[in-house]
Length: 592
Image (cartoon, rainbow, N blue to C red; front, side):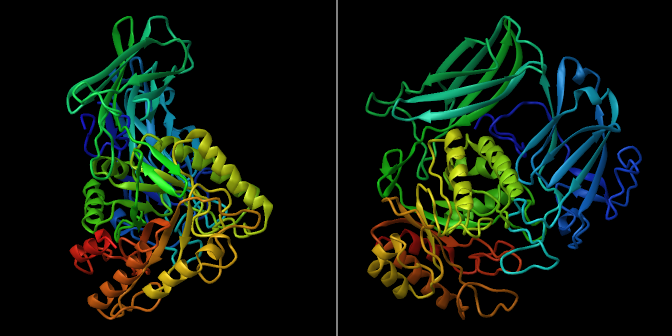
């Protein structure tokens, strides 16, 4: 893509000038929580250095201490030229910091953000000066099960499928300069049947009224060839335009646009230019795809054609850096190895991945289910924390064509009494409809695995290890399972009380999880297998059983890699294949 810049943290909205602030920062634990009272933001008591964006729990950070520390501090200086500040706003961006992040600039409080998985920014223009500037960050985390934490443990040791916690900055920190009047963002929605792109523009004004003479130009190209161009007078801070996407070099047929799919992930380049009386104020590059996801009865359609999803569960952990990818190449490697095993998509489990990962899924045609990190205790506070951060996540990642499904809830985590407690059922209904209010074009699943309330897809988790039993269960007892007259997995029913199956598509969204017997470090689902041949036999049996079910339109195998004590990956934690990927690919792509 024309807008691509290696390591750029926000590939859906790219400007030329930015400063990567990753690297070594001063670091300190504040176990007595005295830092604010003693004003560490003015006189920082450096204890050690840390390599941002890796958390102190990881070897990659240079610290590698896994004990829980509630309060941690970061500090660094920042050189800013006086020239950069002339007529510009200085924006400090955090791609992710867990959980409550407070910022001081040159000893003055700049603001805070609550939530561990969404991007947030501070306008620090009025706090910086030309020359050396002082930046201090305090991150407060906890073992509170009301906050969205995903797979992070809340006790001192790993247990079950919960792993070492992630505290503080764990994604890129970066600096950007924008004009006083600038583009804040553009929400892009493809309308395939109309062959149009709907663009909703948001203008940042820094609190000032809009000047006359503002014009916004948009130019679309495909592989360097012009497709569409439009301009309009900017009269308010939010405006919407539709761009004609019919491509001149395609025949005038029912659909004369280039579409995005796993087989052919065609992407368009788009550039936005904000001008005032002909003078360029701001420029940003992006990209989009013309693709459409629809529910048609019991089928899922991509661009009007039935889509069978061969997904794999991906938790996005690395041995030495945990939730933080070691580099951009590691993200690309994962996607390519998933593709090499015959999968056309993945379910990003309990994590909002680095946005560069979504970029490469867009480029390479990898379908993505975007899932929220779960809380584990229901309360009014949990509802508020989750709703705020989930809406931030949906808005930030809306433009990525690879995301074809939103999955805000998993296995009744955080809504443990959803089966018959109306408060918790209302919560999931509310999140469903809030998600739809922002994005009515993608399916939303609540709640993945069992005890669904309102949901566009019925998803079932079943770790039965015998293929013949799995096939018989969903063949002989299909109607009872879908009607919630019996459990599909031994202990949970498909729908919560008061809800029923309404003909939605059905996907087995967790199964498998096979581990080897010669590895005594951890666990998998069911009995461990003895060797690779036993593994492939069982993998073939359970995967083929699901593929033989005519009413099931996809599956998601657990999982891509081993993660700490969970050793049921198709690759180990170092990304080495445990079995021949070509044999996995043959099983996945084989027709039955």
